[in-house]
Image (cartoon, rainbow, N blue to C red; front, side, top):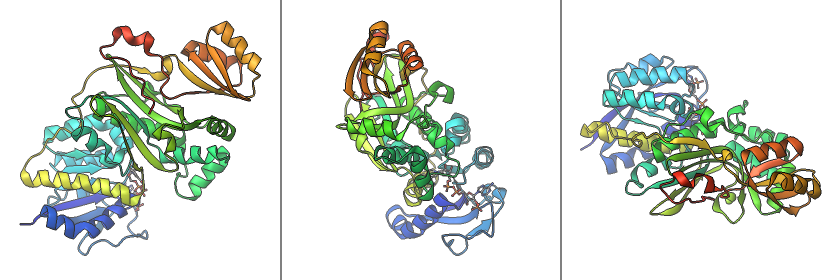
Length: 426
Ligand SMILES: NC(=O)c1ccc[n+]([C@@H]2O[C@H](COP(=O)([O-])OP(=O)(O)OC[C@H]3O[C@@H](n4cnc5c(N)ncnc54)[C@H](OP(=O)(O)O)[C@@H]3O)[C@@H](O)[C@H]2O)c1
């Protein structure tokens, strides 16, 4: 027996078009294997007469009124793929208030208003899913929800901004920051205003969502205080690459005792570690857990088809719940309250790159009590650098200091720990 679910969609851009295409392609398979017919009743857009890359199914209503979709009594499930924060929030609130299930790809909204929307969804007994909001095509949120139930996640570390990763990969092969950004924009991998991507804000938003799923902990943007890639030069990336490290914009979160340590910043990843091999617009999320050890999930972090696939998987789960009358599934961990600290507050080993004579670095090493190893001309490995010493070194020498993955010195925090310290290089 086939049950029809009436679906409405807000947005018909990159992701929305992908949803229509995937829905059309997989309709027969979904009907055969799941017994569900997803009927796209209406789609809302901003510009009614703008040219479209996909053809809507016969009978699908195209409208420029969001209300026309979210207040349609027949529509049971709303897909929000239009972006924006305030407008999308208003539309999602309206849909949930009318008992509709909601699927969204909107990371900016979910990072900042996720708990509020989740509370409303719970109150209304509706599903609210947002798999596509983190790492596009990689089903990382559902994996964290379903596959780590009996396990204990210790750390999550990811390359979750394709634009920054594309630029860093290009800079490691010699392109300047400006060239890398221009190429990313010309190929559609960077937006006209790339601020959120290059400043680490987009990665921080996604880390906020990952933190809920991995640890049940809310994080704010000021707590993460992301460092982007704008201060990096091609020579820094190239020198690091020539000497055994790839610089990656890593988003990291790690449980340690009663504390949670987070970071969104460029990190030097040793070339023998899997994350160093994730290049271009690929995304990857490494999960360190008690039972499994390290598992790495890689795939396209954006793009029409891959992102739409994540959206559609959420749609199917919500559709099944609508049919079975089973809702209110917990789609993130029970909230906890851990002390949040940034990794950069702990001593660790840094890669120091810049036009500085070895004698000058050694002078400061003796004075401030840290050790230094010369790797190559203008390239140093500096061990045991605390936040205070780092500030002093930076104030006195023109070095770009990049933390080396997996070198945090946990000795200072072990007294409060209930778990043994691990250094998650990943
Ligand atoms: N692109 C990706 O690869 C990707 C990956 C993961 C997550 N996401 C997220 O998915 C969402 C959509 O991204 P996108 O790249 O598909 O955006 P997009 O290409 O810019 O498309 C946005 C769509 O929303 C419509 N829209 C915007 N404001 C509207 C309003 N007030 N009322 C009605 N329709 C409105 C636009 O209408 P018109 O076409 O008429 O202008 C357009 O069709 C965003 O939240 C984004 O962060 C995107």
